[in-house]
Length: 189
Image 1: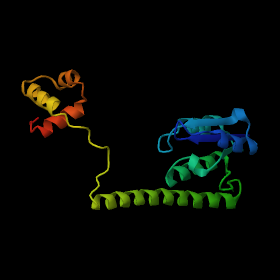
Image 2: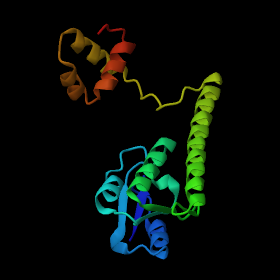
Image 3: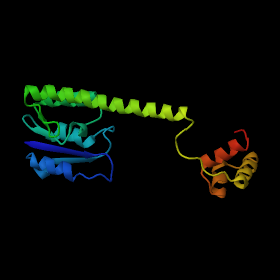
Image 4: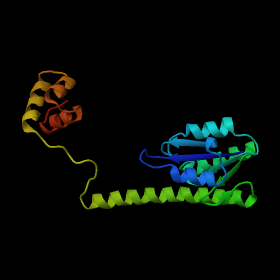
């Protein structure tokens, strides 16, 4: 029996394309498992499908290998588990079918390439941040406005021993803003 797995990582993404591909591959609609979370998190529904529903000679079908996880280790562990259980794997995008020796070898190569892609993106991000910092940009969220009146009031009340949460509530500011005000006003915590 064929089982399909579709995953999106953001709520505003659409599953229709993945589901259409799985249906075209011969997976029945009731055998498609959908998960809506990042591939970096534990995929509970995928684990439950593979461990509890699927049996020997079943086939797991996905749109693309990257729907299964983000690391080579995760993919290889899953493939090993499927192999031990006698379950085949098909990735439509990469045209991989592990019921053949060539398909199994291709799957391992693709898993390595996907991991390399993730590593390259991480390296580019780190290099971009370093480059921006070298040009004086810090990144992150912009600093909020500084209200001298509220900052003075916050500092005065803090020195009197008024609890932080009470000061923040009375001044209608967050506790992190309160601590910023105290730092700017030179108040020791």
